Image (cartoon, rainbow, N blue to C red):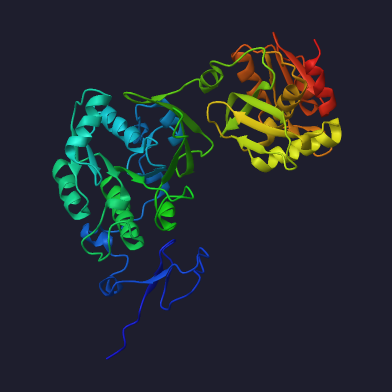
Length: 457
């Protein structure tokens, strides 16, 4: 009788091997290999066998029908843009985000819209909440109409029966970590269960043409919990971001087989649920203190979307040998670089001051286009001089103090004009744009010393 082989898998990424390893060859995690249960060794990758097999048939490209109706509007124009025009029939969408960020809320709202106005049969499945809890949330968001069904269940075998009985068009799974298959002898949320459940849902979506939205928990690193293969299997991967103490929520796509990943959607969390923000720049600049030192407006990009934001800076004299540096919303190391440039090129002894930077509204910007604005805000705080309130600034700062060009300069200028700004300080690299705009003054600068003319009245 042949000896049975032991099977080990990585708890972090799902990598499988026939022997135990101290470090996973795939994700490089240490002590993450565990032995698979005996029963699961006999059955690997077979979750889809519950669905009846169809005869394989190859088709030419011109024989495949494609109608405009294949795109399904979610009721959120912002979400439709991130998805590339709406949901695609037969697609599998994964949404990740921190607890309490609004993952369940947004898909419950989409379910309400598709059932009441889209004419779809919708099934919302929750493995975390009871039916009464779901009803309380749904009633708070609006009147429930149409063929919208709710199910509190974690067993995908039972779920399949309901889907076939009700002939469901749109299915929401909340969340994938609570689902399980009877054929897989592992606890819900384990690597094998998450992988097999996702494989089952993927085949269900493709074979039946059902659009499926799956909500996933995230780890402390911000990644969707479970094997990395989970993100490879689905068609769309979305992430919800935002600060817990802020109403602002940003949705961006990390993967999209049917559209671009360079778009974002901006929402605010209100009493009745998530409300889309069509003009995030105006929202972020609302309530800005005028005629105040250390405050300036810059323009960053979220995807391909220009967003105006207020950057606040504060320099305070310190009595300690090691000054404090705090950066909220921007890269901490970049703040250190800008302070070094100020000390070397402008002669400001930043080592004698604590430096604080804050991007108002809880926004996080990683691109270097806000360098010049951050530097001027620090100089404004140091000199206690205010920057004209109708001025917007953008540009990257180099180590020699030069101002470098950035991408999508025209889009940034148009956004500033739309919100009524009269002057724009921009890199000289974009000087050809000077004089092409009416009702606005474009001031190209080559280095940070030229940029200091903004303080002259």
